[in-house]
Image 1 (cartoon, rainbow, N blue to C red):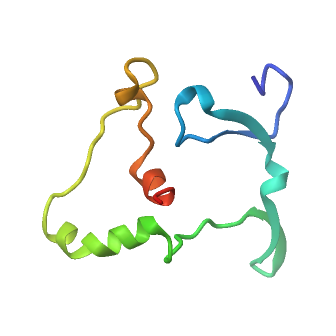
Image 2 (tube, rainbow, N blue to C red; image 1 turned 120 degrees about the horizontal axis):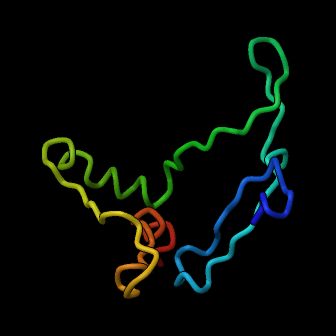
Length: 104
């Protein structure tokens, strides 16, 4: 839709992905809105700021809790490819990271 509307230089996004797909909100944001000026190699350059891991966030705390076990054992979840059509128990599952970030 962005390209069809002549919107170049935009990044598409989808919000509210913890909700069912009917409630997702899509849109576009100009890439320039994500840029910061940082000094790189003695010159100021426009860059997109690094997104670092939140060490106080629930996803990292879950990793810390299982780190030793996961270093020794093959313990992972492979949910398969993303499903866009089908029953909601298959299609409307947010990622484990999103579930942890929105856990109450």
